[in-house]
Image (cartoon, rainbow, N blue to C red; front, side, top):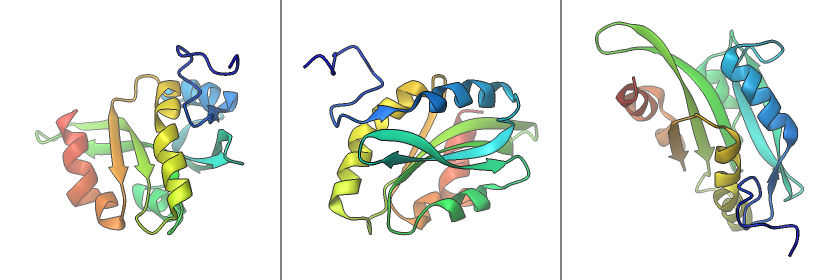
Length: 153
């Protein structure tokens, strides 16, 4: 069908597309430009069709605030700027893409979110760290997130 071309990465086989604002805001977020000098974004799939920004957290927010924004029994995507110290004590930060696909969510959203993830990842060019979480233990900062992020420091 003319709506789906194989080399258009921003629409997946699920038919879900990425809202233009997602890419535009990401470019500014990456560069720390207003109004997107932020800590994180939470993205949702609207009407089973479009990935949009659901929430954003200002710079003063923390990773814990980000986790609290994720619904208990529904899927979301997140992008967060994580600040941490390297093993040799240097302060640094990394952009991390998190796919929240909880075991407790119903089957349809789980399939929709897992099948549409690549579309969003291709809009967030240059984010090298991708984490899939299916329960809160996989979101735990010290045990699950930090060890992965440190590998890229």
